[in-house]
Length: 99
Image (tube, rainbow, N blue to C red; front, side):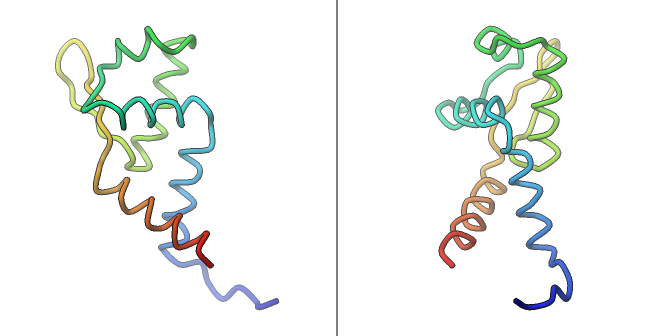
């Protein structure tokens, strides 16, 4: 087994994506957003049986990883997949599992 010389930026980015996708609710949110153009935070409240504060934390985790983006359309926030980052994440996961 080789010694780890240094963790690359690519590995750090892939780990951030993996962490963001490491909860079933976040997977569900991504699935919802991938099947529609966008979704308002209030609509997510209706389909997910979790507290708003918990939903906010999950959305924040996905947003911090760059997988989703949100725009304020007062009084709600409209969430969409960040297609550029999502494509990047898919390629990175594909390359990881291809090895």
